[in-house]
Length: 314
Image (cartoon, rainbow, N blue to C red; front, side, top):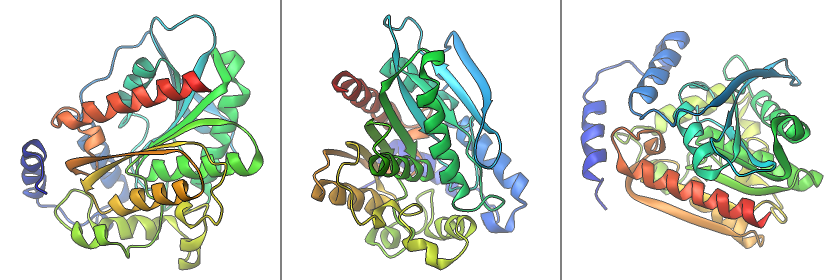
């Protein structure tokens, strides 16, 4: 299978740029460069009438969130989507995924609570997962003030954010609340191992490299023992029964392809409804690259439709 021509053109341009490895760059510069790159490759989202930045309480201190309300929404409480941005657990934030959140809010007709969870290496596991769970609880507990419906909650994230969304969905199932209508996972990290076919096949030259992902994992975890902890690697959970239905979107040329496939298979084996869409000829990150890759728009439209369907059935 070949890369889509749009994706190949973008990759050729990205691969022609000479830069030191991420782990050799000053962390502040690395974060600025990642953020600027992702923003430059995305189109602006809808100009919503109401968007608010807040700080909410968390177990390790305040958690910044950005809340989006859809324009001209139906009367009555709205469903709520808690969003965890991709990051490798190290980079990016609310601005890098602002256009995505605006599009999800308007397209799915829901309130989006975007969470700027703590980043490694300053804040290693489990602090980001603690933030993710605390933010989800806050969204549920404050639904009335937000104009949201606590009976219609979903979680979503791409890459590392997909890992956090999956961990939240598992914890909600274990604790019996909140009732998650859908976990929308975009090429999620579900395992902390690099021993997969896709890691080997797409190790270099496809945006996210295997070496960069290994560095992200080392930055995030405190020790190798945590690689098998299901709150770090949701694929390692022993029992997935009762976990929220999943919509999983993957990219065909992505080191994390097998993470998404394996998680979907394990969820299905536990009786969880799963819909998996693999975007042919695409790479890790395509979800954000809406200015250059048409498949980003297709994937976002699919995500909005899946959310509307899940909320309607909740």
